[in-house]
Image 1 (tube, rainbow, N blue to C red):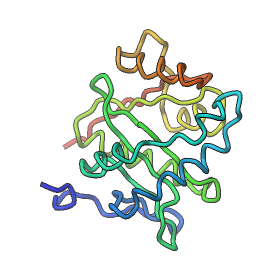
Image 2 (image 1 turned 90 degrees about the vertical axis):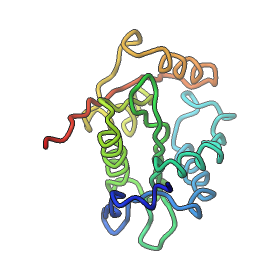
Image 3 (image 1 turned 135 degrees about the vertical axis):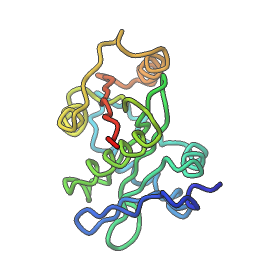
Length: 188
């Protein structure tokens, strides 16, 4: 069954004239430009120049789209200006990527995308939502901490999370930290 055929697919969320909704197939090729624009904000001491052009592979986006775990922030004019893709890691929901184009930041889109991923994770029965991010940048770990995420000690994560952090280090990413948001299950 296609995830869009499901009667429980939530309506788009609205934030400052923008819509947060499941991605459409037409959105997928546009997400790399959003990701690259967002990556330009990171200092080279944290992301080596060779990694700045790296994006979530289109095949990964296609699979996430097909499985209903890719959301976009659509501008009032229509094209995507942000996105979030989720998956799983060590039996927890995992925020694989979150990006908002710099021209559309500070409007609550990142917060809304994270909230939408957390809603999906709760509905899927996950007890927590994890991610990896930069420790010191204001729009990374401090942003997620304001949303309730807690930094994890290296030994607190499972083997998949440890492997993700090790892979990021091999790519030259610096000052990475894993974080987790406990998800309260809705009360009946």
